[in-house]
Length: 425
Ligand code: PMP
Image (tube, rainbow, N blue to C red; front, side, top):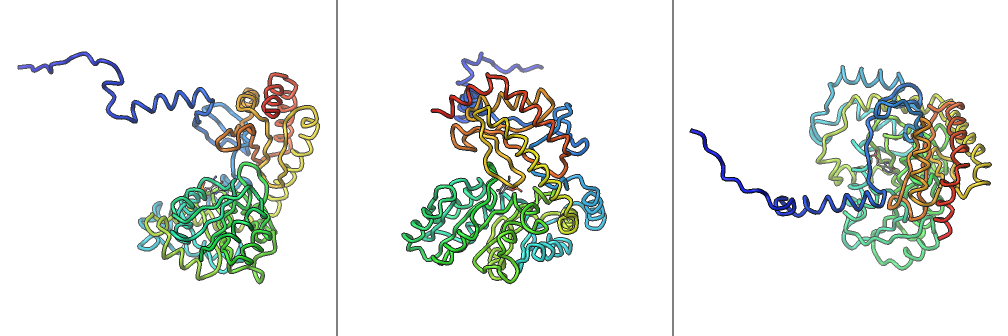
């Protein structure tokens, strides 16, 4: 015997949608589409050097944070394979239980020695590190001082902490000082990117530290984009400022991701032994998350070795930075484009309006070049830009190809005029 369900025709999609979100999301997505703000993923695979396959199409990319070209380096690959053979693939648990392998322990020691700070703690991811070390350091009744251009992970960490957040204008030490002077909080934490991820400029670290000393604050620096790139042997922003080793300050916590110049993933925090011990005891993403697998630690030990002993990687990167900046000069003279000051791997070419930046990205894409356009709200309104990420994996010919394509596109007035208009308003 067959039974048929009584069935009535559904009235409208809205009547049958199961909840508020499923009714609301299509409208929100349409608004993102209208504002050219919808984010899209692409499927990529490495080919050779900076050449990758993007959705099946061969492209020359200027969008990776693999600043030293280590992500595909044979020594890292071999170290990861041996690590997998020796330790397996997963770490099996939190570092507080069963996940802290001898490889992870050795990596922490290598990292501390490399950045010339007393002790380091290795985390499985950079975002989670920032989002959870800040709440481990400050809470209700404490005060946070955060640069307006800080990375989203630092912003989330500040919010999660429930401390009072004082945001200061980007790099404005006078504004920071006024806020510190006015604060009566007992615990004060100043938080800053060391290299700002969308502009490529470096924070005034001695200036920040001097204020922290004057107002008895702690300084947390996120050197995601400087570790491996800045300072002698790529030891990072603190070493570049001469603030490591015998000159290390006990009031600085140095955080860096291992997902960029180090070519893998994860992060570490380094500093005074007591501060690191406190983070080990109190950081929720450390205690309640599975430790990074040992195979990654082995690959990262190889990264540290290469950073230290292969100066040619940084020299190649510096040569590409100089080549790009010099090559862009004539273009800047005949367009409204602006190249932000930066001696790091991140070179921001500010175009202005969203559509002009997207048109330029599309023009480059049609020429086989993949350079991402970064738009508000990631960057301030009217400053949509190409974020050109350079790497030791780029050859001189690669950069020359990008410059030639940009030069050709700069001559197309439809690309330069909207940008000029956007910058005037
Ligand atoms: N800090 C900064 C400044 C970053 O740019 C990023 C990632 N782009 C992170 C933290 C997060 O690091 P991860 O991607 O390694 O989780």
